[in-house]
Structure formats: structure tokens, C-alpha cells
Image 1 (cartoon, rainbow over the protein chains, first blue to last red):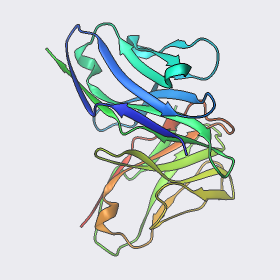
Image 2: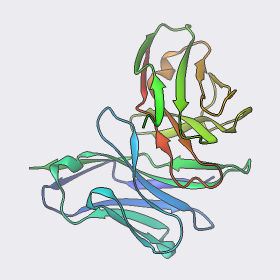
Image 3: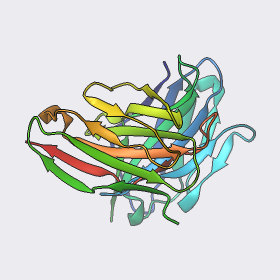
Length: 116
Length: 113
């Protein structure tokens, strides 16, 4: 079974500072990788995704992530944090289950706080 | 665009009661799934369906039933609610095959007392 590890359940940054949220996955083959964002009392929405091709992917709201196969990582970054970035972020991997269908496996989430 | 619609948004149940959480999508997605979200646990897959008439268990299926009679609807039934089922439930849908993007509903916050 695939697994996703997000380092740090809670990250605090100052407004204007770099945001770095870490994600590592376990997979024997390159999977599809995602970052989702969840604002308070809302559902999840897709921030960005890696399927194939360019390893640096850009998403909404100025976020980007780099797929590094050698490190099995897919860290999320944003150069300058904004107050509106305060939310919970989930890394996820899509891969075939034992039954042969694809499933999404999520990390436990990282709650981002932005300090004025 | 409606996307994925979940009802109700909030529900309080007594232990032992049953209820059905509704999920409907209007994107003609074949793949639908139910997750529960608990603090510090992320999202865990309860059940999923790859098309009408086909369902399978996820990571935490005990205490829940599903059926898929149409492409649009994927209800989740709690047969006999327990306090351990207090959680936020999310329904999601996507195109079949390798999941390239999942669309989520707004969630149902369930409390079992």
C-alpha cells in the first residue's frame, strides 16, 4: 500500500516569508501526486498536481511543487506567504490498489498559520 | 456549476440510530468515494465505486454501507451509529482510470452522542 508522509502537523510562517511544506511518498513507480488545500469548514480543493512531464509544477495562488524521484518527495513552496494562505494542506498520491483500481491516499495534513 | 453536493451539512445522531449521508455529482464521473476526516488522521477512505453497480471497501469500511444505482448518486449509510463515527465525511468524484483530480463536496459534520 502506498503511504504519504507530511513532515510537521503545524507550520507557522510570518507574512511575506517563504512557505515550505514537506511531503514524501512511498512508491516503486512514479505515482500521480497532488496537493490539496482545505480552508476552515470547507471541502478540499486541488492546489496542483504532478502526472507526467515537467517535474516543477505550478498551481493556484502562487504555489508550486517539485517532484524529485530520487528523494521520493513532492514539497510544496510559495515564495511569500499571505494571510489568506492560512489553511490545512494535504499531500496525496494516486496509485493502483491491490484490487486493481486507482485510489487516493492522503497524508495527515499540515496546518499552515501565517503570522502578521 | 454544482459539482459534488453533500447533504446534510450537519447532523447529530444518538448511538444506535441509522442514517444516510447523500452525495450527488453532475460531472458524469464514474469514480466516487467517501472519506472520513479526523483530527491528526488526514482523510481515510471508507468505500469507493468505479461505476454504477460496483462498490468496494476502502481502509475503514466497518459500520458503513454503500450502493451505487446511478452514476450521479453515491449514498453512505450508517447502520447503527457509534460515537467512534463522529467525524467529518467527504464525498469525492473523479474520472475513471488513474485519478488525475478529485472533486470534493463541502462535507457533512456528524456527531454521535
